[in-house]
Length: 412
Image 1 (cartoon, rainbow, N blue to C red):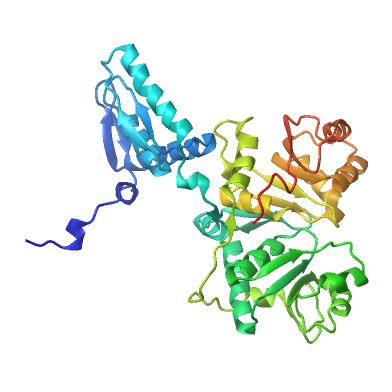
Image 2: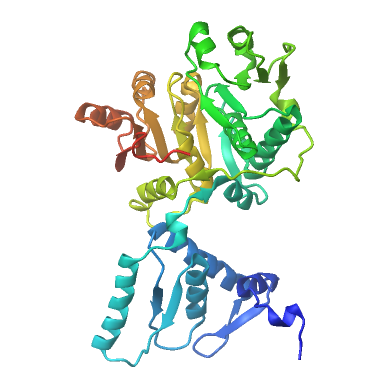
């Protein structure tokens, strides 16, 4: 009367298909004369491709998709699996049905799209979980370095965020409030994610601030991330506040400082309770739609996002998080190294560039030749006719220019 849990439980079809995806394993026999073979690997990749395509469309799939096909074909199964992976359901329509009847079936499906939404598109997204899912061998999260010729993988970013969280647990600090006094670098994001994983909050400070302004900005901060070149400036601003400093690239450390390299070498405590760092689906959708309107079927994995921000106006963390959620590599531009970026952009295609007003003016002054490989520009500010003209001077082939003010981008 009883069976094992193995026989009672349902089986994940995609998992089993993936497990059969060894070289040459055949899933379907196809063709006019049934002399063509479709492998399990091809079927698995096709299902993933269908699911990815649906994510580009941002359909509200709470109802079902339809298959109306002349005869049994393997593509029917690939489509079915892809839609189910994405969270939708599928009906196989009667191919012999009269045209009016078929139209009525499809119309009811379109009506479902318009009237309902899935939790996937309403809910926020866990950024760190998405980063972990992208941590396959060699997947790039950031392009870094003096000449922008170094790659930071998703796996390294994920491990860095966990290391920061583990380091904070060693300090036994309650209600962690952290500050970042740093130009655009990938460590800023790793630190941000690590503090948020631990349950703390992070402020990105004005990098052009004076010591007096910093002294006020550091009020309440218990951890500060800064560059080695700025350590004395930060040290003087935090002298009486018992602040712990984490520094980048410095040979001499004050008594209350530790290098970021040492933090990243810490043994990760995987038993720590981790908070979720959520990004709004609205921000992810805005970024994805900006590109897919121009390039339907665009794959973020093969793209590149360049974030240019002035020293006194920090880069929008929400947009960086949205990029990482999609698996879109990010090029974080230090405005002091703008010449290197201009040189880089002459030889590399960049899908999306975000820029604010001061950095736009810097680009106008420094760019002797317009940046012709950029098609989508996200402007951090209000786009007036003057601003639009200036943007087109720098990015003459931009096919889309959109505002991404704080009112438009949902906050983390």
